[in-house]
Amino acid sequence: MVWVVFLGTTITMIPLALFVGSGEYDLTDDIVPWTAAFLCVLAGIQLLTVFLLKPMVAGMCGGKYQTYCVLRWAMLESISVYGLLLILMGMTWLVPGILMVAAVGAMFLVIPSAEEADSFAELAR
Image 1 (cartoon, rainbow, N blue to C red):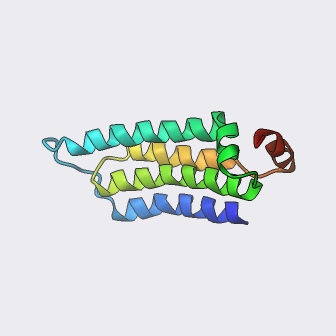
Image 2: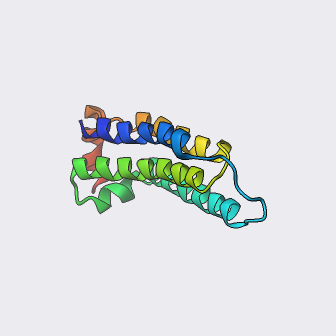
Image 3: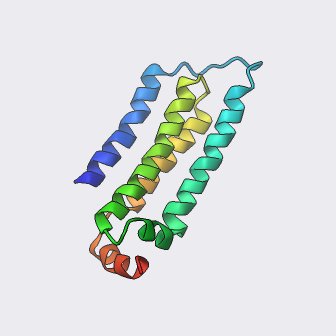
């Protein structure tokens, strides 16, 4: 149930960005491209953490599978927030759209399952 809420808020950011974002920024303002580069690197680090550093994330959660899942979902949802932030800053849709689609796609890859819950006990050791 919690996964559905995280997925719903992640998907909701896309129409919100469509409604609010202007899609234009002043080319003389260097802060938007630098912010986009920083947020893309940060999103990449978060994706690597969620998918490749599972034992580290499991160790941070104190052996609780529910905390492990919520932490991973929050990290993925923040990637969508980065896309929304870039849209609100006036960036065109290419980079923010990729961030938002990556966040939604990754949310579908971390659906909780019985197999993952069983393997979580080994990860948390």
